[in-house]
Length: 320
Image (cartoon, rainbow, N blue to C red; front, side, top):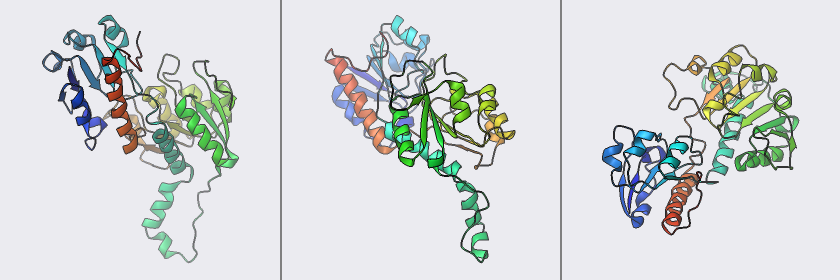
């Protein structure tokens, strides 16, 4: 079996990709599969492994033997599912491998902003702390989670883990189901406007769909508390970046922590770069999923997806 593993640079060079060698002949590429290189790289490939590559009709037309695409990810919006199905190519994702890592990063972003850590870190490093007589600095107050309402958009595995941790901190947890199909009864389910107006922190954990694209827009930001914090670890396009910048500059919300952007990598002229105050905006380069343990589980699960497909018992297939 011929396997092509692309995008491995985006999954991490510290991993052992030789685990795929026992499944067949494998070609490894650090970069993406594109319309330009697909014909050369995929001529004989039956299985393609990707993370960031965007699968187009042109790529599929230049991969006549391709039968399976495996994502090094849970999300699969980079694969044109309609075209994959039309070319009889199955797409398999990896599920639940990064739940703890994403939940952890959610709280890293929230706590960084909530406790104004950039300000206090700069206060110490500037020498101002060493120069004063008393032991403390309290010029920007911060609150306890136990006095807050944490609003969640998307109550899947990651959303539930975030809810569990927020509850352990003492926060009141509410959530909004964009699809309307959530079966969760452990927390109060509310309408979107209620979530916006009641939440002190809103974290996004929903898939990108027609229902969630630009969900967080100018209208939404105006309904939020001026003291609220937004955390997006879902997909960049769930948030209108232009509207977010305006909301932050106009102090309509207090702060935002972003791990995902639209596009990725960040556009060189992104308006987010207008905000250099890290106490108001922190942006990380799509790393919430990427703890060492999560990435190791990811490639191991991709291997299991290939093995199951090879045995005629496919798993984690996302297209019919």
